[in-house]
Each structure stands twice: as C-alpha cells, then as structure tokens.
Image 1 (cartoon, rainbow, N blue to C red):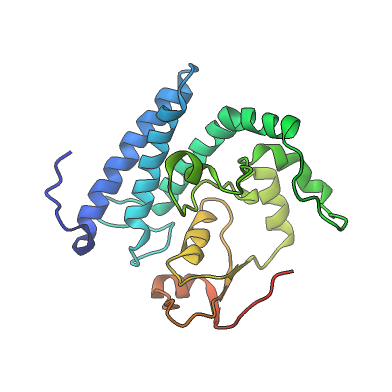
Image 2 (cartoon, one colour):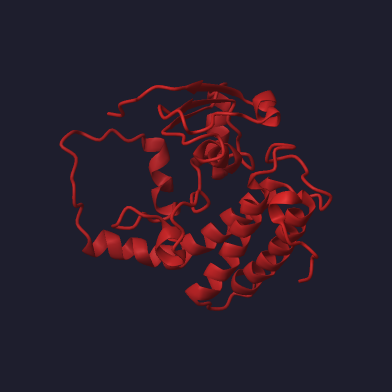
Length: 238
C-alpha cells in the first residue's frame, strides 16, 4: 500500500492512512478465520491481531481527541481498533485459549497457593473461563506468541460482558482507574482509559508514579473528559 509517508512522527495524516489500512486488512483476516466456520492456524490469528494492534499504536499518540472521537481525515476512532482487538480475543479465548486453559487446569498445579482465604465475588465467577488465559510465566498472549514486551491489548475487561456492564453501570456512579507505577500518561494510564471506552468508560483516574523523569503531562482532550489526579509518591500494594 503506497501512502507517500516517510516520517510518521511528523504527519498525523500518514499515521491515519496506515492505521486505516491496518483496520481494513485486519478486519478481513478476522472474517476469514472466524466467520467462515473453518479451522485456522495460530500464525494466521497472530498476523491479523498484530495488524489491529499496529493500527491502535499508530493512533495512540494522537491527542486531538479521546478514544471515542474521530481522529485524522480518515475518520478513525481508537474505539474501533480496540473493539477489533477484543473480537480477536474472543476468537482466541474460544479456540487456542480454551485449549490452553484446559491444559493448565488439568496439568499445572497452583505454584504459589495463597496463605490467606481468597474472597471472590460469586457474581463474577461465571466469567473466569471467558477471559484470556494467563500463562505460567505470568506473561500474556502478545508477549509469548508475538514477542511484544508490553502490550495492553490482550485483555478483556469485565465490563466487556453485557450483564456485568449492566450491573456495574446500575450500582457504580464513579468508576476509578488507580494506576500504581504509571510510567507517564502515555504508558499504562492512556492504554487502560482507552481500553474501557467501547464498553463503560472510567470517570476518574489516579496516576501514582514516584519517579520524576516520567511525564505526567495530560492532553487537554483527556483532562476535559476524565477527572485525573497525579500523585508523585511511592505506594505499597498489599
């Protein structure tokens, strides 16, 4: 695909063009492996998913709007690419992920059983087998199969399930993201805020990061939409 783009960091329109191409091709790949009810290889799945991730990554630094707003002249929304990633995840969870989960449940014992009683909420247990598997290395799918060190795409939030979303929306007026070790706004805070947009967006975010060299500068489009607080402190999680 010829776009005439040579410096992606200088042109949002070039990034938009490549993101649009990624969206179209990835959607066709998903149709080929999921909609035709035929078997597919993990490499076919990986290629399509990585294209969806590429499109999201190209738009990640665009600060002209939040994930639900149209970006670039190609009229793209981050939410569309996030929804595409989620569609791939559902295919994965129902195929290779289901196989992996069954193997884990049967053959892999719990390596570090907790020394305390784990209190889980009964209302959410039904979703435990419908989420992506966590590998024994504690790494996610993108790290293991695609060699990507950090990727926030391979996660389905609980609110991706309609019934869970209805319960939370009816009982929670404020939905707060608490990010300990934020590493700057464009690291995990923005990825996580965007990941919830197709389902049930956060209303508030608290960024906790003690290191001064990580930028806490928040784009106006996000500070207008969310109530975001930055705490430059150390935090102990227990």
